[in-house]
Length: 271
Image (tube, rainbow, N blue to C red; front, side):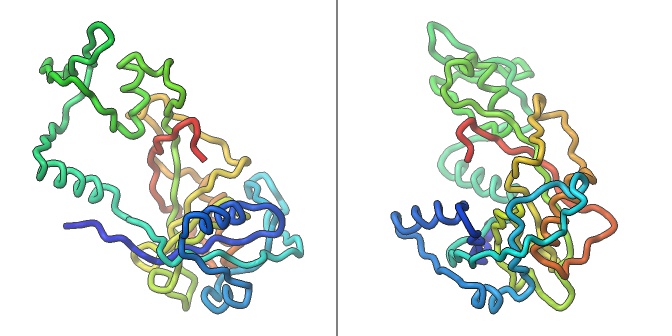
């Protein structure tokens, strides 16, 4: 089957002072991205479950005893982009790319590992697999995702690259929608820069919560993409879910953690 683009639209909160929304608005207007400016009344009309409190940045709840204390400030409103959305099945997305490539003559070898990128006089000759099989090719394209830095090192080109890549471990978490509100049907993808999170609808009337990498969160760079902790950690689960609870006060926090852990392929110029 084909992937489905979930066109929910996206809400980005406008904060008092300098914030990411103001930079985005400038680019939206320059390149013609369809968008709406919502005041707090409009935001409440569309998303009555959202608090309008502004915390002036976030911390980690296990390090801040005043985590839920309010500042008395309010956000200014929101920027809404109706064309925004998400694709929730990365595996099916990859399979769609595979089928498209095969339809144009591409071939795939699975459960194989590259052990060498053969070169001579500064030119690529091809790759050698762990089985010993050699595949000749004048061009080798690195699409290894979080393993891309491993391939770059194998090819001996990493040091001369101006922009390098690394693998970053990330967690996303699932919580149920507040009672009486169907977030799967009526929710939006939401960027909450004040709390350093994003969240969006997920199947089963749940909310998926991810991190926007606030400075207080440690970054976990992975040296071996085949060997890392793929279990949700209690500390990061609390950090992201509690931040969401500041924005959605009626959120019921489960006693058991739930989520997914995987790796991002991150370049040096990652914004």
